[in-house]
Image: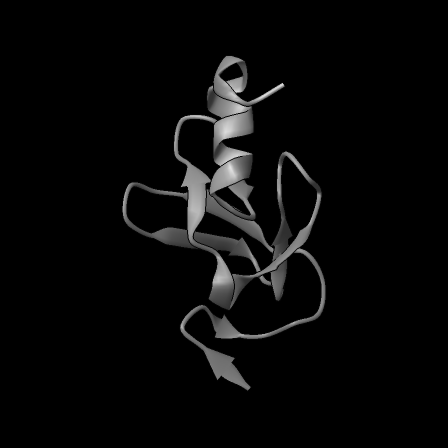
Length: 73
């Protein structure tokens, strides 16, 4: 099966995160959230950091990584 990232192979993909795009360095069907370690299918990946070169599962994970002092305690 083809996706917008090419052929799918099971396992974790290695990605170069760009400003408005991704570059697949090593094929796979998912990446891991840098904060929660949740599996993120490549077709569902929406949040990442170009500077830190890491992916996030949801907006709360982005906030936890970049603005931890703003999270409710």
